[in-house]
Length: 349
Image (cartoon, rainbow, N blue to C red; front, side):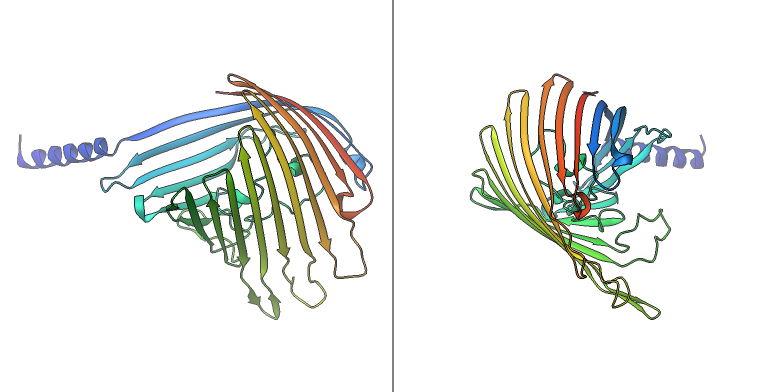
């Protein structure tokens, strides 16, 4: 065997040894859900929201992870949504994707390709048995808007939890170079949008009480003679759990941006919500109520929107039965009502 061949085989052996020392775990999981829905409303667009239907939603989750020689960990996550509509099959939409680097005592860095940011994770933390209150309404709710501008194409830095006896404090910061736009391709650039930042804080008392808050800011920019002012969002919440009972209260505020001149300032939005959930063995029941109000800056007066949800789920192994009744008063801030009922069965695999 000549020396060149020996060198090549030695290099290959070294590469294989490095790979085996940094083993990776790959897994694919998923779930599928069949939902029967019935909707009825007398709001302005009631003609398009009334009716009944049966739909199927299937999701696949791909995860991989490994450990580097220095002890850091790297993991990736991708969610593929195979939901069908009444017009076409989605064909597999990438609904969530992140890469996370764990650095031990130095904290965690997460790249949010599609959703998954620390800010977006607290858009609505109210206890629930099935889905969020705004999930079953025709109203274009702003209650869950926190973090929506910095959730894709952004990077999180998450400090390790700081402990004070039984209490722990968690802090995160998010930066998005193109807030409100999707992620750039690897080696490419996204739309020339405004940059955005978000910060969150959570204090866990260790006695069932959790308090948290967050602030999101999309920076101002100028384009030609048009100037757009900052868009700011804030949220705060209190959660308490004692045995099978969980209760929560959350507030949100959106200071909307100036859209470019003195006549197109968008109105601000404020809202609050409360919820209570009971979970015992395989049964979960919850009730939630969310209120929103648009702070009009013109002669127009918007009515307060009230959304409520009564939900229950029962789990038997890999199968879960769910039921939810939603009701919205004054959707879009105008007189009217929207009601929706959902019955579902889902399977995890």
